Image 1 (tube, rainbow over the protein chains, first blue to last red):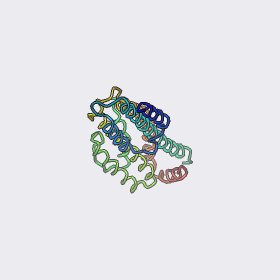
Image 2: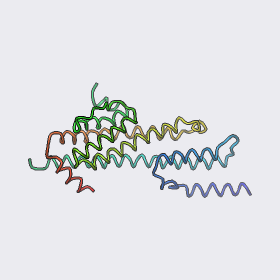
Image 3: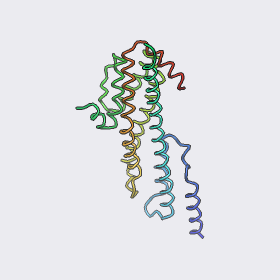
Image 4: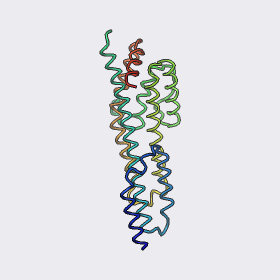
Amino acid sequence: MLNSWQAQINTLLKERVSGLFKGIEDLDSLCTLRNEIISALISEGTGEFEMGICSVLVKEIAEQITRIIILRVRRLHELETMAKEIIDKFNGSPP
Amino acid sequence: MNLRRWRKRSLINSMVVPLNMMTDVVEDVNLNVWDVGSSRNLKLDQILSMKTARERPGLKDFATSYQQIMGDILSGETRLQQVQESNEIGKWERDEISNISSSHKEIFEKEIESFSENFTALVEEITQNENFDEIICTTLRSTH
């Protein structure tokens, strides 16, 4: 019965974990949460079930951290575009 | 050393190059931007932002965005480094934070150069023309 329950939890988690941390856009919060999850689930003699859950959650947090990094690159490009537009406008304007 | 090669030398150095160029606009800021101490660089960001807002009002939005993005990048880098150095990392076979951190550095090393070049060009145009504020204001208004 325990095995069946654990299998259900694993399946549910894997199905629904995608985007679980999407609402958290602060890197510091994500790192703290990651640490909390590891501390809560991993200790000496930790079973395979806890290890599996921890692994799924930590990987999802890593995905969200990567999304934040990509977002920063996008914002840099927006600023770059703004700089280009300013220069083009200047170069195209009459003296 | 060739400036472009030097810029590639490290992420932090790449990021402070535009700040150095900005001192052309705010001439009386006598701070060493090559000092990569993060707290000092953040202070420099703030000073440049305030001075830019006062002396080049048209650049306020641009300077604020720049300060915010660079602040986020620097603090993110520091935070990931802290997680990497923490003890719990040893409990995992695959160090996903190290992977993220490496890709983080690679992305910014690659991307910051084109951004830096455009920003440098912008600052050069500004320093050459006294009437640039009006053009900047018009452009910023049309992009917001």
